[in-house]
Image (tube, rainbow, N blue to C red):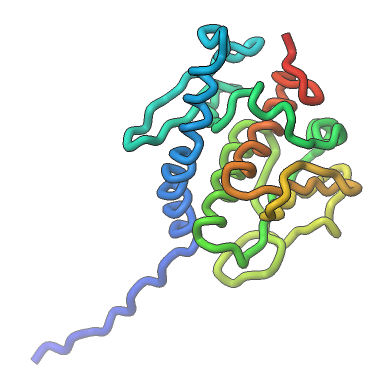
Length: 213
């Protein structure tokens, strides 16, 4: 009689599960942004020229199901945006952010572990787009969590050589600097706007909130 051998089930990989959440909720997130983009195109008196900013040309991509993103190529990477540069000029952002990012050897993108799946996916989507567009970035967590094999880094560990960008999910919106720590405040739509503003400023599409001609 042949005995059956018990084969333990493989434990789910939390990092792969997180990546699946990012892909699923990113479709939901970009769908939230469609109305504001279409409203801008409709009301702009010169909308035909509003997709070109300096060396960068933005293309609206319909993802289906009422969702869409603005896409442009940065350093050979296709980067997704939920806003045009002119739509985030009024967002509060410390002028020290870009010099700190440009002079850094590495940049940690750190977030809390206690976010809901939806909020966590938004932060992960923002980190993904930032990491694709700005070099030397890596993910971290603010607190230890056995589910994730990521370094634990917060403002206390931030240095000029390794700034830490903390995603503080809140109902206030803006990007501020405390020492070598960059704090990104926002939720839902506003978190996406803050992410876009950082990239626009880094690549001189905006300069201190003003469109560079």
